Length: 160
Image (tube, rainbow, N blue to C red; front, side):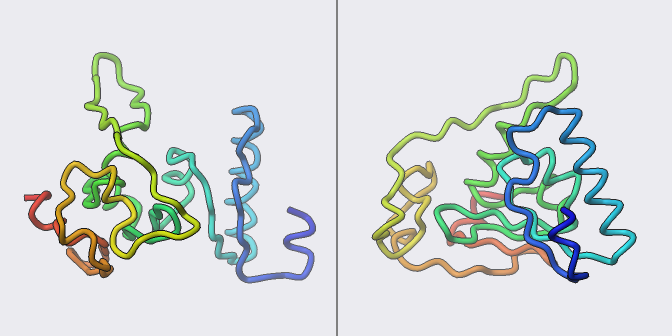
């Protein structure tokens, strides 16, 4: 972190900064990031697979699947109303610390497409239970709710 802030940047990319760390050390790093952000008015791009940490630190979240943006929204809205099937599956895997509450897990099946030479269309389609022929066409990131963007041709239909 010292090297990252030495030149007084406005923007810092944090790529998995707390992965493989003990939970107590993670908390210290997260607190340090928040303190530095407040003191220096920093903007972070926080790249992580740990959605609990992402939720805690982020104002906005962009969910990607094999290099494609599938959903982008304010943090609270994304966690309250995920609209892309991949985001829904990701969030179904986040542990919920409530006794007696058993969340419905979405188990993904199917093959992951090659990230080297992907076909046009939604890269998540081979694993998506809602996929149709239209999903093989290029998908457009569309605003389905104020500030909530989704790249899925069936998002409105599956989120009724």
